[in-house]
Amino acid sequence: MIKTLTDQCSPNHPLILAPLKCELWRGSVLESTHEVHAALVNTTGELLAYAGDPQLTTTARSSLKPFQLLPTLRLGGEERFGLLPSDIALMCASHNGEPLHVQHCEQLLKKLGYEPSALECGSHFPYSQAAAHDLIRAGLPPQAIHNNCSGKHCGMLALSALLNAEGSYLEPTHPTQRTIFEGLERLLGVKNRTWQIGVDGCSLPTPAISLHEFAELFAYLAAGSSPHDPTSTASLSRIFEAMSAHPDLVAGADRFDTAFMTHAQGRAVCKVGGEAIRGFAIRDVTGRALGLTLKVTDGAMRALHPACLALLAKLELIDQPQDLYKSTVDSSLNPFWRGKEQSWAGREATEIRVQIHHRI
Image (cartoon, rainbow, N blue to C red; front, side, top):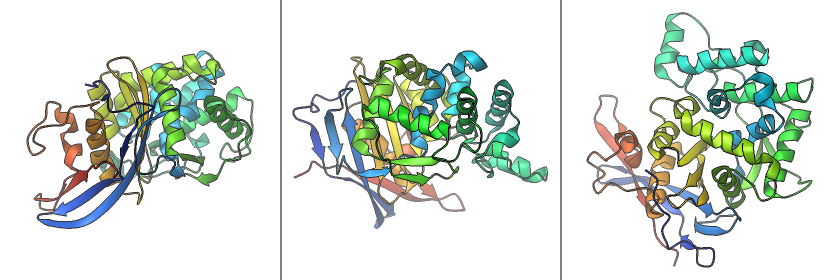
């Protein structure tokens, strides 16, 4: 369950931490170290806490998906296509490619009036090992619909249809992408920004953004409104509620995002992105809306999950188990606290220990 933010955090006196250190221990030997930066803000964009450099700029990657979907809803996509909350959740997903994800994506494409061949995300084997093995046994190659980003690309097709835009929606100059970036500017209260843009793994443009500014977006998602863009209020709320109601569609079995949103019981959503970035939209027990972003500087995903939980516990937004070596109250989060890895023979080999220190 989500708790109340610690009183050590305030706009006038933010909690200032050194970069988090995620240490990989193999037995009694410290083998590797990963550094993590983070920013926590309220809905006015004020820093309440940060670790390392809150102005660290990185690409948003798949953590941006809820905000890439926003224009589709704001422009009436729900009404035109009959979108359900489950459809909205899938369009925010980096899913496992499990049967429920693939089947739902097929149904969503039918609603939109497209064939799977319209998806421009490319193909890869499902993240789900069982689903990947099923394809191999059947002698079938993976299709675009198995891509973890296929739901997001359904959203791109929907927005392109709403805009009557032809051509490849992958291009930064395409009306679909221009509308998405204009939507980001509306949320943040900026105009005509020159975005630094890279190419994401699914071929869509991905913008560079600071952890501070990215946390603002997640605070607006938690609040269901942006002070700069009242027209997005209803759509932000629907995205938050859809992700909360369907965490299994946002990621899948054995995934942090699904486990955490299930644990949060409607008070928080989160979204991971490539190269170890994640954003949280949190409504604490007092009703305060918060945005939290974290980035592992070397891109090591194995460090991200323990770092997220350790920082949330430091902020008193979740309980930390008294003994990480024993079962916690919520067993679904157990594997993510220590980031442990096993040998091929099933013996525990390594674990991640997160060091959190106040900046001196």
